[in-house]
Structures are given as C-alpha cells and as structure tokens.
Length: 415
Ligand code: CAO
Image (cartoon, rainbow, N blue to C red; front, side, top):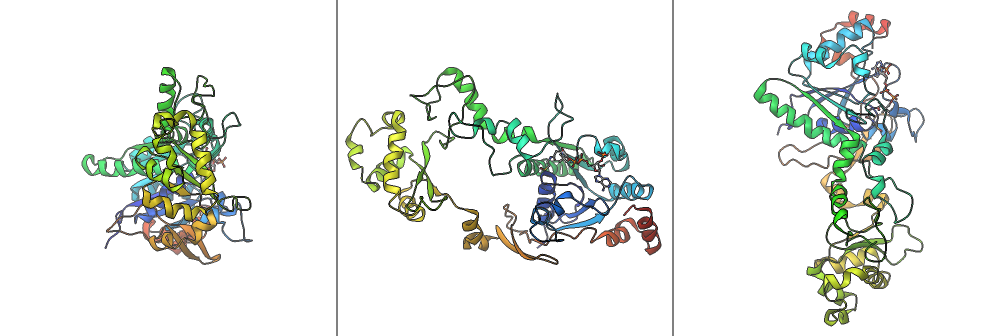
C-alpha cells in the first residue's frame, strides 16, 4: 500500500511549532520532507525545554517525525545555489520565519516562481496584511489576538490562554488544508501558488461560535451563558466559565476523590432528550412532574441549581463510574483525563494516536501519532532526524554533488 503523498517533496524551512506541525502531517502522509536547518545550530527547539543533556528535546522530536534534516545556509554563495536547486526539485516549500526573512535570504516569491512555476509556497505568519503584519508572534499572542483569551476563563476574572496550542498547531493544520488544496489545483492548472495562514485568522476561525454570539448579543442576552438571567452582559461576548458552547447546557462537576485529585471531574451535558433518564439516575425523579423543572425553558434560569444537584450525585462516584452509568442513558459526558491517563490509555495506543518511538540518542519516548487516519495509507511514526543527519545523502541524491563539492561547501560554512 503506497502512502497518500508518496512522490511529493517538501522543502521544509519551518521552525518552532506552527510550521513543523504542518510538515510533520505531510511527512506522516508519506511526503519526503527535507528540513533545512542552520549549520551548527538547527531549529532552536532542539535545545529548548531539554529533559536530557545534549539530546534533542521532546519539543523538537515530537514535532519533527518522519523528516530528513539537511544543514544549509542559503545566505552563503554555495548555500544559495543549493537552495535554488532544492526549490527546483521540490513540490512544496513551507516556512514560518518572521515576515521578510525568506526575501532577505534572496528568495522572494517572484524568484521562487521563476525557478519553479509548479512550486507551492506556504507560509505561517502571526498576522495577515494590516497594522500588525510585521510582528513576531508566538502561541499565546495568537490566542490573545484571535479571540480565544477574551472568551476563555471564569466569569469576571482574568482572560485565560488554553493548553491546546490552537495558535501554533491549529494554524499548522489550517496550512495543511491549504497545501493539499493547492496540490490538487496544480494537477489541473499545472501551476503552484502561495498559501498563507495567519495565526490570528486561524485562532479566530476556531473561535467562530464566539463571533456568532457577538452578533446575537445585540438582540438580547445570551440565554445559555451563566450570566443569564441574574448577571449582566456588556457589549462584547463575555467569558463563560465551563458553559457549553452549543445550545445544550453543560458544566464540569466534581467526582469522588476531587479533594486530592485535581482531575477528578467530569463534563456533563443535560440535553433535553436524555434529561428524563438523567434525573432518574441521580435520584431526582421529582423534577419530571414538576413544571418548575421539567422543561428546558423552566430549567434555564436555574442551571446552577441543576448542576449543583448533579454534582451531589457525581461526588459519590469516580469519574469513570459516572461515565459508565450515564453513557448508556445517552447523556453526553466526558471525564477530565489527565496527560498521565491519556499516556496510559490502551485504546489510544491501539489506534496509534499515542505511539512509542525509539530515538537514536534519547531512547524510547511517547508521542502523539497522526490523528488523521487514512484507510489505505496508514501512518508510521519515525524518529525525528538528528541535526544534519541527511545532509550528504540529500546533496548527493538531489543536488548531484560529489564528495569534493560537499567538502568545499562544508569549508565555506554553507552546510
Ligand atoms: N541559515 C541561515 N540563516 C537562517 C537559516 C538558515 N538555515 N534559517 C533561518 N535563518 C535566519 C533567517 O534568515 C532570519 O534572519 P534575518 O532576520 O536576519 O533575516 C533568522 O534566522 C530567523 O529569524 P526569525 O525572526 O524568524 O526568528 P526569531 O527566533 O527571532 O523569531 C518567531 C521566531 C517564531 C517569533 C518568528 O519566526 C515568527 O514570528 N514567525 C512567524 C509566526 C510563527 O510561526 N510563530 C509561531 C512560532 S511557534 O510558537
């Protein structure tokens, strides 16, 4: 069985997280991903948040599986020529340097197109065109400027960033969609094109429902928000604690052991269709005949009391017991799973979503495998490359260099 992207070659100029997320997915799909790194230094994340001395960090290894690494400085004379040849030989170039960095290397889009009109050139930047287009951006800046932080957190408290890397990895995933669309389009047009994703735009896209609410708020209070009916709304969509983002009320409630275990909680959703069974399960059959409680409209202004009653029951059970009881009743719920629990979850190991990888200098470690499953081309997770591990191989096979030219390039500091 061939890989979905076999035969596609990626010139991977990415670093840190957003760009590497994108190229890692392409590599998992079978593309030959050539990661270009600065000689002697490499992607800065190789050395960031290290847990083992002189070993590539988990930050790097977990974002750069299935790639090859070449060290190359395109700002040197030979490096420039090698880079131009790589542009000629690759299908997609991906980069997430600060605005203008690739131009300053001597490769503006016009030149890339001239060298290879079939090239798809994909970039991540912090912002799109506008007042902030020249700014450097990291994850939390994107979360704050894309609408996530203003809508995340407890009511009336400081805005919060989320643990999910929606700015970096979220943008990388958006970029993959653009690259694949451009590859498909190239089949018909014969030409490459630019693919651009701004981190602010991607976060905003993921916060789409909050822009929905921004337009609803001018027509009256957001009745599914905990501020209704006793709190107040301002002009903008407020933070809503753990309220459900959809039309069905939901909340996080404590489970048995919460006093000692910070993750002993479960999210429960009291959707109308399952409320009858839910009320019975928690011993509140009396609600079912009481007009004060037996319709969604009657419960809406008193959701805090509904969830307080539910919590009295969930606190007598572990989160897994609650899950086992409520799931057969069609009550949507989900235990708060810690990273430790996820790492140890057998079903995630079985599907390849959590994978153990063997790395030449680190040994065995866990990573998140490809969450996108293709029936005919399953992904296999291969350890990230050491810095420059494939420099010679790439120079010989793709550029056509012999040993002497490689040595000269090395002396010049091009590789
Ligand atoms: N050989 C020689 N030089 C190289 C090189 C190589 N192989 N690879 C990169 N460089 C140089 C670039 O040419 C650039 O130099 P100049 O600024 O002189 O042109 C420099 O290294 C990289 O610059 P940078 O500004 O991108 O790096 P930084 O660490 O200062 O900023 C970041 C990092 C992430 C803030 C910035 O790259 C950025 O804003 N990127 C776009 C948004 C993004 O992807 N952010 C998410 C990052 S993940 O949290």
